[in-house]
Image (cartoon, rainbow, N blue to C red):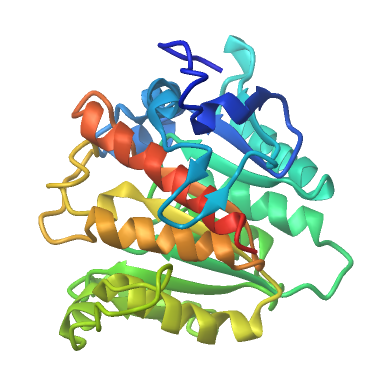
Length: 331
């Protein structure tokens, strides 16, 4: 675990609780690779994401949050470090298998993995690891994916993953006969309706549901006079309502967030910026609600490109982690 400052013991922060290893309640796992972005011919630079995030964790919120009256000091938080291979074995397929095995191991130990990428192809390893941990059971798995566009691209070289086909590869190779997996795309663009997208939607229409960003924005403005801890933003309210419905048919769920779905004014450190995406307030509310819900047992955040912008985005992700932890303490 890398830190750029010594924690102030008079004002203890979340980082003072982070130990090394794969133990405890929640564990940060880095997947520092942008091979999937390069395969897709898209902007890259996400490989530095996990290590850059660790520079900002020492600044994340206090161990006692006075606003919510939540004390997180009893939590056991760990940082596993980064998934890695020897240089000669560092193909994306080998790295995905390493991530898959680590997710399965975390689930066996009842640890919530918080995976930080890297490009969003990491979702394939995350889903595969969850599948391995539920093999032989009737557990119904859900995926809620917050991203700008759905994973509809043609598979790389016909059978391999790139950043825009992770879910598609999982469905075609791992989950074709696995009716347990249901998927909700949240905050996607409604104009994403080209031939590849329509074919993907039609092929897996029994698995997929969507709540587009346009529909979120057309909703009435929420009542801001809500009890503390209840969402007051458009996306926060929509997420709570739609997720409660979605999770009625799921036993466990993975939340996957591509930072490209967020507004570039709040989150500029991404390969492709989004001028009309979710605000920082909205994603913070979503993280807090996710933490509160016991059915969310793993998370991933991808597309942090510190080469584009470092400070504002790094601070936002560290706060996303912090508010997930706060929500977890409310379970």
